[in-house]
Image (cartoon, rainbow, N blue to C red; front, top):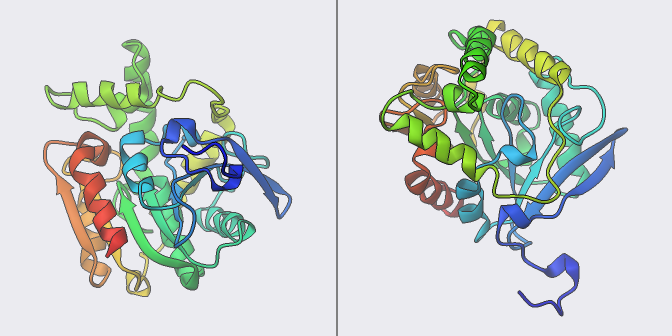
Length: 288
């Protein structure tokens, strides 16, 4: 790294070293991080339920950031961002648009996971001109089957994790079998690679509001996915207990020209379990 460069021109190659930044817009101060080379279309990452900036897998982010300007952020009321979490997915999408516009971008690619994928879909429908390409992982459409049951699965797995002194993501994201257990532990360990300047934990109130928004998304009328005309990559494990894997197939069928990757013997966190296959696929998709 050339230390003679102005700080704004220094390329941060690893997510664990990305500096913590903030920007204020619409009365909300958004916490975010950025890495990779500036210029071109940035890739904005939309995170999952109860997650902050520290919940992104560096084995996904770092390969994408080799050739792309990557931005992760805490939406309103999440982690170190100010304000209250909205109780609808659509309002979360409006906040995401406010954040992106505040950074000065009028065109972005979006990488989304789980709840983030729901917010991304709502953003594309409400602000179609803002998004060039869309990556939807571990997620489902408005009105999708059993999305409104996410809360029950989540609370059950939090209890299971508490009883075994494990991270709930090991239960929620990975199969409890010979391949899933070590993959879950490895994923959780990777999230700890950043040791300085870590984010503020998500509050129980924020978590509860997000769950209500997901339930409302699941109970809402079926979405018209033909309105999504951007190139779209969809990925999941074949045994997603949180957002049923069949919904990924359903979105692929309904989003014209979309691509689908389903990973075998894996759950909600299939892209993290198979990061060595998925990260290059995502890079190829963004570069095409």
